[in-house]
Each structure stands twice: as structure tokens, then as C-alpha cells.
Length: 308
Image (cartoon, rainbow, N blue to C red):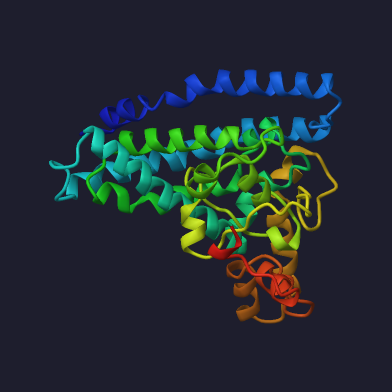
């Protein structure tokens, strides 16, 4: 297949275009509801920053996504399963589960490796939990994101199929950015990611830090020890443990990269510089260790399958 043919196939990844009007209408309706009922769900500068990130993301993502599509095509051609796994209904269902499993690890690593966190932190810097925050995607994470999905074309799934399911996963995650939905029936809360679980994920409370990384399914967090339920007596506080003070779009998108650069300059050897890049946010070579698991351990709190 020529590059032009690959690009034409890549151009068929249009599902997100149909979802964008739904996203924008939902933001408008939620904003109107918040104003009418004095709920204070939106803050103008915070919301404007979210829309700036919405504009930045496809610009940063375009070349990595195109490169990933081409790579996935050639990996799919190499797969011994490509003639077995096609676009049957069961293949779509299987891919939905596998995609979410990959997303869980991608998302979790974005929280546990500081260099990746620098690309994801944009999404968590919002001080409000609303549908505009759902649009405030991590900008820098687009540079490394697709590497996590490399195994899927080797399992026989074609690139367009993979990208379509990734978009469906993104669409699902939009509605869980809400304070308007309380807890759902227990079976749903057990298996699926819900607004309650995702409020925990966006919280800066020590109990909640770096928990609930699943996209559609919360079961991965229960299985791999990163689950925490929303406690009745501890309301989530949104934002970062140390919030940024600038709403300039370039600062919102790059502030953690700047922070890593300053820390690496402060470090006195290359081992510590590498630790600043690869350990979880909060590690310091000359100060208090403020990584989430360390802070929780000091308080006797640990996430895990029994916390739900």
C-alpha cells in the first residue's frame, strides 16, 4: 500500500467529528444548568484554558497519530492473526476490552512516570469537574500515547478498527466528568468507570491520589490495586497538590516540563536527573518524598480492591 493509500485510509478515522457537537452541546447545557441552579460548576478562566487545550491537542497529535497508523498497518500485515481477526462483532467486543486494558496501563503510567505525567497533568490542572474539563486533554501525552497500543495490530486488529475503538473509549469517558451524577447501582459501580470513580481520579486528596485509571471499566483498578471509592465523608478537592497560578495556555500545557527542567538542573548527578524523569511525581533528591504512595503510607491509607 502506498503512502497516499495509507493516508486516505487514515482520513477515514472520522468518528470523533460526529462526537464533537455532542460534547459542545453538553458543555452548554451543563453550564446553563449550573448558572440556573447556582451550582458553581464552572470558572471562566478554567473553562477557557480547557478549550485552549482542546485546540492544542489535535495539532500536537496529528503527526504521532499518522505515524502510529502507518506503523500499525505494517504490524497488522505481519500478524498471523490478521485473516482470523477481522471486523466480526466478537472482534469489536474483544477489542473494546483489550483497548481499555491498554488504556489503563497507559493512563496509570502517565501518573507514575513523571516525564509522562508532564504530558498528562494538563488534564488534571482543572479546578472544576465538568464537561469542559473532559475536553481539557493532556497535550504532551500525545507524543508517546500510541506506543502503548503497539501490541493490538500484532493481535490481528487493523489500524482503523483500533482508532475507532479508541475514540469510543474517549466518548465514554466524557460523561463521567460530572458532579451532577451520584453513585449508580452497585453492579455498574463495580464493573464500570462512573462519575463517582472519576471524581476520585481527579481529586488531589491524599487518599484519592493516583487511583481509578480505567477508561470504560473500573475492574482493572480493582485487579491491580489502584482502586479507591469515593468516601461519603471526604469530598474530592479537584486540581493538583500544588495548583498552577497561570491560565496562559502555554503555561497550562508545559508547566510540568518546565518544573522537571528546573529539578534536573538542581540535581548534582545524572542518576538523580534520571530519577526526576522516570520516578513518580513528588520524588526529590534533597527534600521530602511526596509521591502518592509514600504520602498514603504515612497516613496508613492504601488503595486496593478491598476499598470498594
